[in-house]
Image (cartoon, rainbow, N blue to C red):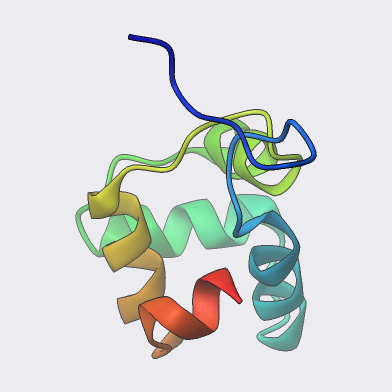
Length: 79
């Protein structure tokens, strides 16, 4: 079964919001990956890059990790 795309053909809805949150907290992509790894999530800089450029699907575990790290709700992350 093929995976769905957004109306624009992108693979996730959180890319732009992730960039904004990361910048709000003064984190580089590498810094964000480091914080996520410290929290026990296996996400590296390349994963962050691909999510932000909407070239990668995001798993529910990754969404939870980002919500927990930035202390935002799921709705805040995808709006």
